[in-house]
Length: 229
Image (tube, rainbow, N blue to C red; front, top):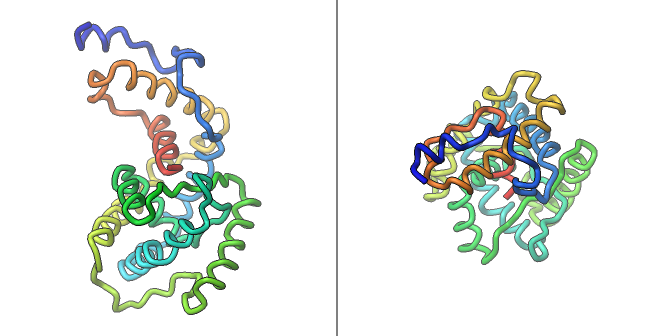
């Protein structure tokens, strides 16, 4: 089949049946709603985007959080805890580069560090409080909240440089999904189905789909799925 024949034979995403598409092990709709709330919080936190704050966030992420959660992870199942906002933002941006994130985890911890499936406010609050308890016990000299030194201006490693660039570039990511309808359940359920269709087409037609650009609803699901690790 030629490339033109392959593309012309593609159905719309909504026409691909449930049986033909992939199945996910997580509730992608709930995860997407949580993702939107998180990105909104990041966008509404101007303190988070100062360079000294970002550099301190990266230090805390690399030197404190990742070793901590690696130690607490049993098998492939991460503990039900969530880090402070600045650290979670660093983690989020790192996982937007899945190949780099996987290589980092394998190099440092000899395993991929996953994220807990926490998608509702009640469990999120518990997970954050639980993390605070563990953090303060494990790192008594380290504040749980980011208290950046305003004189901290230089990157200390390649990871710092790459992650600082990524965190700076993605600070306004929420703008792509800020319209109220993005959070509506009906919209997200349809977006999930269309995303599954998109994945089906990529797997089915391979290189013929390399020029395709996902629509905003598919992109939201793609980003959500990607950062779940």
